[in-house]
Amino acid sequence: MSDTLKQLTTHDHSRDAAGLRYVYPVISRRSGGLSVGININTDNRCNWRCVYCQVPGLARGDAPPVDLPLLRRELGGFLIELRQGGFATKRLPEGARRIVDVAISCNGEPTTAREFPEVVALALEVMRDAGLAGSAVPRLITNGSRVRRAPVMEGLRRLGAAGGEVWFKLDAGSPEWISRINGVSLSPAAIARNLNTCANLCPTWVQTCAFGWKGRVPLGEDLDAYADILRKGGVGRLRGVHLYGLARPSRQPEAAELVRLPPEELEALAERIRTASGLAINVCP
Image 1 (cartoon, rainbow, N blue to C red):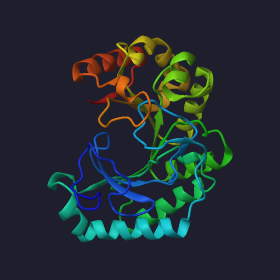
Image 2 (spheres, rainbow, N blue to C red; image 1 turned 120 degrees about the vertical axis):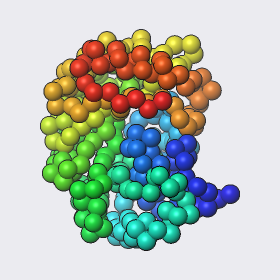
Image 3 (spheres, rainbow, N blue to C red; image 1 turned 180 degrees about the vertical axis):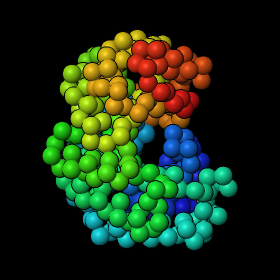
């Protein structure tokens, strides 16, 4: 059955679900319902390479140029289609037909796009025109690596002023585990600065993927260093942590080595993060 015919589930986040270039719907565990995604990294390029990434053919690089008029037509048209009910009736479970967010969540890092601030402004305008302002959250899902660049800061300010929020990736705290999990050489101090900047510009949640790897649990081993980044990033300005496990298979070479943690192990990690940081923790096994 093609992606444009089968019913959506939390285990299938296909970017082709609506047959569009930039816009795709998913049933999101963490958002808690129907998320309308915007994928501007259509060539599957990212400046990171996370071992659990579900993107096929992932390559290093920045986002390609964005066709803003096409994005506007797709997003506006798809929101109208959802409101009219045809797509929802055919493809969505009855309990998951309310739009909970419009998320810039891509097959790569969205803030690498030159048009990033324009994409944010466009999404907010289309949401207002569709009557979603105040009822659906405009959201950015990011690895946070570019948040201190001026155009990205402009986009974050727009998002924050519109009642939006950021989900900022943090999977580890030590240079060793950051390099192994995310495929980048980035110091904990730099990540903490980026997190602090992000949280000052827009309401920010940390999103953390926990899993087993070759008989080890990286987050469990690295939790002190991880919590230190949270503290230096400014726990008083953070909304909390979305701690989640593996729901869909990785498309990276390490896929066969990764193991989904049982819910009780995720809950135990959540309690350790809660104790170390004082933050609210949402757990999605």
